[in-house]
Image (tube, rainbow, N blue to C red; front, side, top):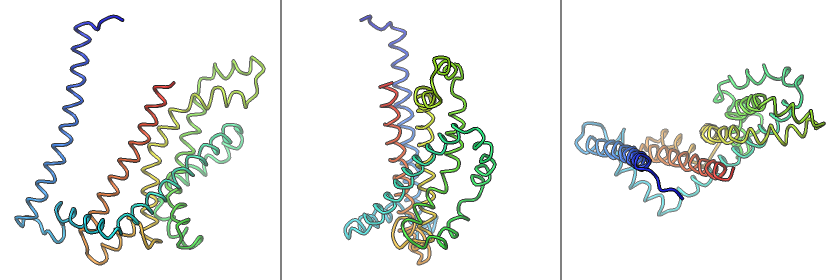
Amino acid sequence: MNKPSRAQELFIRRLKIRRITVYAARILILAGFLFLWEFCADTGVIDSFIFSSPSKIAACFREMVRDRSIFRHISITLYETLASFLLVTLFSLLAAILLWCSKRLSDILEPYLVVLNSLPKSALAPLLIVWLGATPKTIIVAGMSVAIFGSIMNLYTSFTTVDDEKIKLIYTLHGKRRHALTKVVLPGSVPAVISNMKVNIGLCLVGVVIGEFLAARSGLGYLIIYSSQVFKMDWLLMSIVLLCIMAIVLYAVIGVVEKIYQKRF
């Protein structure tokens, strides 16, 4: 095996330094923000009752960990988010395949998908509650409604932009449309599917929180709306921080899946 040249070693070293610098800058910005927030709350620059502080949020979290109530809220929101995400991924993939298989059907349904995707999803949540009742299933459907129409359109667009020459080759070798789908379209669209999943996981979390605002008695969304009503700002900000952490972790998991796919293929 050839030893890397000095120029290559220098380039790799620069990449490592740049990566470390980026991570360090991120940590410093976060630490600086938390320090400034805590300092302003302690010195009275901001009203700690309204804006709370990192120490109060941490104390609130420790208290809810001790009585285990926070785990119930986190687990419910996580379950509803994952359920809506998996259903969106499955249904959007099946719908995109169906549209790709039938050009006439795609021409008929395309304007409806555009309109449904353009609707403000927060307006659909009260309607879903009236139709389906205030149940966890309704919250899962609310989470799906935020992501599914855009996901179908993005996947269908990805299917239609696959290399036509490869599809023509399948037909030249007397292959059927199902062969073009399984041998060319689906394998060629895996990066688009994973990219779509990255977007959908955040959208599903947003949809679930909107649903919990209106139709839940537990979950982080419920905790946010309840704490705002009783003016427990520590609870409210803690719930927002937990949602941010949850979104980061879920996004990172899909990022790991993407890296595994890239290494294997």
